[in-house]
Image (cartoon, rainbow over all chains, first blue to last red; front, top):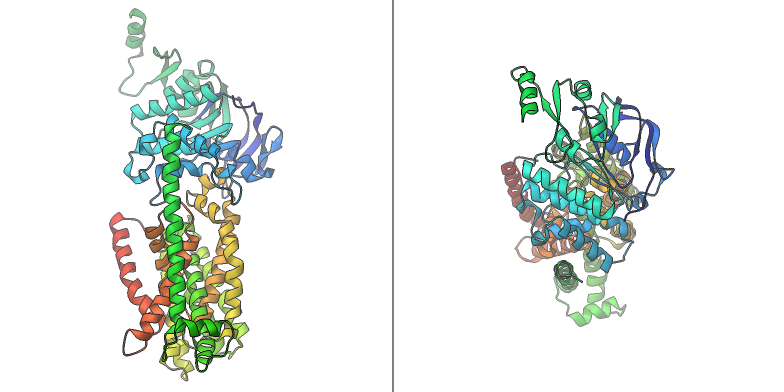
Length: 277
Length: 342
């Protein structure tokens, strides 16, 4: 099992250029759990993730790992604890799947030392876990979107960090692959105790897979807690300006939202139906 | 060791063997060409004579021809070829586009222009010419990066701006040639497309020293360069500081390329061709800095031999590399145009 870490954002304010996106946000990431950040477009969820993964330096406040400011830690040392799957990584031309996954081992290498048995083990394990061993010698451009995403996650896994960030890992994927990816991440969390923090658009999948949810609205943290405690129609109304019903997901018993639109608003009928069934 | 591990290990070893084998082969070809550069000329000298001269023995006739004319020519070809090849590969990898190389985006033209200005207008010393060419190359790089920054950085825009700047610099060089007047056609060719003619040992030390210092630095950063290829975010999360790494790589490669340009002119398309050829020959997966450098050496020496001996008229090396490089540039532009992104 991965060790327990105290990982915090302390009153961070961050943004791009002169635009402040995140304002005075403090979060403590539950160790060895799966946390999901939700919120509307432009609310700062990606900024929060990137700031915690030290890709953005906050204008004020700090991110600390076990009491130490991450900006002050040696980058390669930190890369052994903190990994990130970016939203749209760039594929170098002509590289094979196994080679790409192997690049995740970079923080574990020292100058001039070749690959050790541990490196091969980590790469093989990551590829097996993501079910991509059959593509080992393929070029990335021969793969489908879902397969590619699994390759990138495998690269992040080969890095063998205790904490893993993912920025919308299921975007552009069919629902089948969305569920598959989230299942694989759950496996990772349960098997190794890897702390997972991700940004996800789908509230129902978030509520199903997350141990803990952070809800952001206009750069501020408005709610946090286990999905069953915080997903309510008033929260959804607050952060998405959307009327909805919250029902119980019959498959996972987690809360699930049903949006109400202008043309579909027969709430009474639904309530009756749910009761009678 | 399970099956997956074995297969990953095997294919990695296969690629590594190919990498090592091809790199050795390229080194052997380079050495053969270096030998030919010393043997061939108005008079042919056999290997025995060449070796004797190199060992410092006095061989009648050969000592002068080899020691004073052919050796400096070979040395400048060797070091300039390596500098262009390795530097070009670093640019192309760092900016993730084969078009983004010192030949196409005007960095060699910047060095050239500064060198020509010093020679024709200021009648400056050799040392000053070297310094000016480095400053010229760096300034051109900085100007291109600043102009392409804008609201959002795009490599496509960087390349287009670079091509524009290169055209301006070449026009400036042509203008200097005209007002310089006393210079004949061969020396004009040197600054427009590159030539190894008239190389003198005492002018080559800045280039030799720069290559000997910068090569270990860029090799030390080679694995970081590979990680940078995955994009800024992935690189940061893998523990590479992107800006610092890029700055050191950029400075080292511009230094090598600028001094190579000061010594031999902007030998056309070598920096542009070496990286992609190296990739084709040795494959992807290990750092191609050394293979690209060796391809640079081979291109320059082979093109110079062809230019000297294949035709009735002697052509400078840059004309030959230009003939090889221009069609590749067109091919690349057509392919990129089809893909729809620059």
